[in-house]
Length: 127
Image 1 (tube, rainbow, N blue to C red):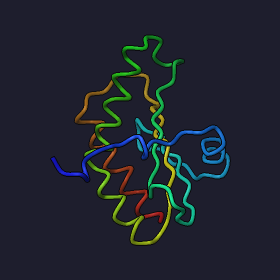
Image 2 (image 1 turned 90 degrees about the horizontal axis):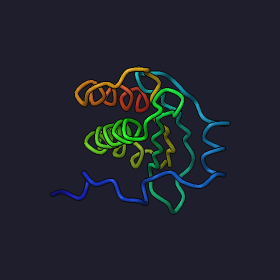
Image 3 (image 1 turned 90 degrees about the vertical axis):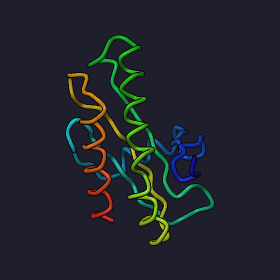
Image 4 (image 1 turned 45 degrees about the horizontal axis):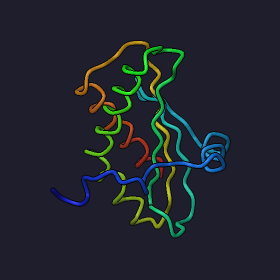
């Protein structure tokens, strides 16, 4: 197993201040079924990319479904993050990203993976 295909705790976006800053100052776009909010900053001593995954309770009442969708989104990101991390490190930036699930339907992994690739491609274009 290669090191680049991992998703360690250090790459998770946590902390109320950082999350609030992401949603207030960040830019957003939709790559249905994902709404992507991102904020670029100069590189600090933390990870180059921090990620937050969110599935609303309003759309999926059962925690089992919410957790399954979050697992699928995290897995799609983990497999495709190399598209983003190389560019961010090259430009010496730090990036915070939130992936919000906006569909009312529970989609399969193939669809989520395809849309994740599109979303990461759009983020790279906007950098």
